[in-house]
Each structure stands twice: as C-alpha cells, then as structure tokens.
Image (cartoon, rainbow, N blue to C red; front, side, top):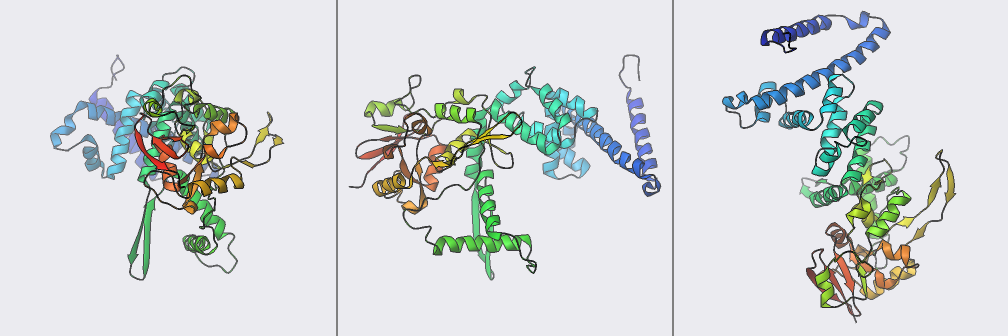
Length: 453
C-alpha cells in the first residue's frame, strides 16, 4: 500500500490471493475434532466474514459498473454481465447489482456497518427494498434523528424479521401515499386460475397480503386440530378445508339476501391513528379547506356525501395499523376494512397491562343493514347488478365519530368488487332523494344510479 493509503493493483491482487489461500487452509481443517465452543465461535466468525465479503462484493460491483469495461464484452446490461461471470440466477444478479448501487449512493452508513460485519444481508435487503423506493423515503434517510443512522442503529439491535417490520412501519409513516399506491398495485395483481385438467382442476394465482391472510385464516380455522390417525399432509388438509368452506357457503344459507359478509381479520389500530383517520375522511359538505369534487357539487348540492378519499396531511407521521403478525396496514386498507368491522377498545398501561376493555360494537346495526339492503336491493355502482349477498355497506368514519348514531342515508350497498374499487380509486358517492352519484377525485362524474321505486 502506498503512503497515500491507496492500494497498488499488484498489492491488492496479492492480498486477495492470500485471503483465498487462508480460506483453503481453513477448509482442510476437520472441524468436528475441535472443541465444541470453538465450533460455535467459528459459526459466528464465518458469519462476520460473510458480511464483510458481501460489503466488498457490493463495493466491487458498484466500481465495475461505473468503470464501464464490462460493456466491451457485448453484454446487454451490467447485471447480465455479472450473471454470465458468476453463473447466478438473473433475479439474484439484478438484486445484487441494485443493492450495490443503493449502498454506494443512498446508504453509506449501511455500507460501512456491513463492512464491519455488524449487519446481515437480510438487514441490507430490508433497507434497500423499503427505505429507498420513493423520493420522500430517500429524503427522510438524511434526517439526523429518524434517518439512516436511526435505522442502522436499530438494525444492530434487532434480528432481520423484526427489523424488516420496523422498516415497513418507518416507510408507511414517512410516505403514506406510497403505501396506499402499493396496496392498489397489489390489489390489481390479484388473480386466480382454475384450470380443468385430467381428472380434476389445477389452481394457481396470487393474492395480496390482506386477502391471502384472510383466506389462510379461514382455511386453517376449518382444518382445526388433526386427529392422531390423520395421515394427510398440511396441503392436503388445507385443500379439503377449502372445499368444505365452499360447501358451507353454498349449502348453509350464508349466500342468501340479507347476509352480511365481513372481513375476518384482527387489525390493531392506535387510537391516535384512528382519530387521524376520522379527520382524514372528513366529507366534502363538512370540509372548509379543500375543493374535492367541486365540479360535481356545482351540478347540484347532494344531501349527503360518502367519501373514500383521505387527506394525506392528516395522516403524515401516523403510526400504521397492524395485522396480528405485526405487518403494517396502509391507511386506505384500514379505511376499507373499517367499513364492515366491529370496533373493540383495549386500553393498555405503561407496562402493557390491560386497563380497560370496551364492548364490541358495529358501525351499523343489523336492522340498519337490512334497511339499506331493502332500499338499495343491489350494488349501487353504475351498471352493476350484483345481489345483496355479494355486498357490504360502504360508509364514512367521519359520521360515526361526529354525528352520533349511524344513519342509513350515509351508507350504501356495494358489491365486494366495487367496494374495493371505490376505496382504491377514492371515489366519492353523493346521495340525492332519488339517486346516487359516483364522482372521481378530479370531479369527473362516473355515473348515477336511480333508487328503485
């Protein structure tokens, strides 16, 4: 190494060769002959070395891509060149090249901690995936209190699973709009293929986190505890449970008019977040600071407004609601789930002791739901004729929190698909004496549905 601290190419190559030779020597050692504690210590030390090598590899990848010599090989991209050189899967090569860029350009403290062996590759993957994917989150990384330094410090304290959840919560707090967009994109990706094949059907598809957990909860609840003589595999028992649920739905009367199908999920919501949600869902005829759907209001003032929009300013910095496993729920998803949920209050003390339990209560009573179904008769989205047993009551949290008892005039029957659609696209619904009007956030009128006589 020169006096300036820079390595010569020759010295650098010799050092790598020495490291490689040392590793070959270690490989020749019969580890089982070593004392037990030495073997355990070896596992820990090898993990540190692995992390340091990951950091060196990321640094080398970033430098090689910037150098540009790889392009002379005819490779279509640097990731393709890296895949050809290493024989890795295409997805792995792309991910490692992207992480190398992010570590160099956006996560210098993370790169330093990885080089010191203080972080694992899983910690780094969580940061590159969740903390650098929007401009707002990249800007937040420079914050002296809640930026990259904060995240790296927590990464050193938590295992990768807990740290990933922490970063996801940090991401929702930092950029709630991006979390809502991700939910919308995931919802639009959902698919189910049921293809007839020899002797049966083949199922394939993809579901969002919310829908997947709901399906898994229902199937596992139906599976129950297997008996001692049940030799079926877990997938086999789940397949049987799914068919059992289908038959229960078809034969048990739950799909008849008047049924109220509700999400079977537990969502934990901090009271501050719930109050912010209420304020963020303020409808237009109560608003004083925004001109949401102003063009539609100019046509004719409605009697009531059921909004699906949420004011981002009210939710900035709000803690995310969580599923039972700790996964954060975007605010728009929470608003969607709240439409058909039961509220159950639990107050905790400073030591997490339960101080108070409130009774469960539903936003709409059974009588009110039956009244809305009798009035609307079908999904009220323009052009949809879905029957009541395929629907839910869509309403606004604002009215429940500020106007006392819920009002049937502030609820509308929507099928499951259009209920999701209204929340995904933040569509406001205006009520008149004889019809509903559906309005996009820009004020464009989608259409109207005349109430049945």
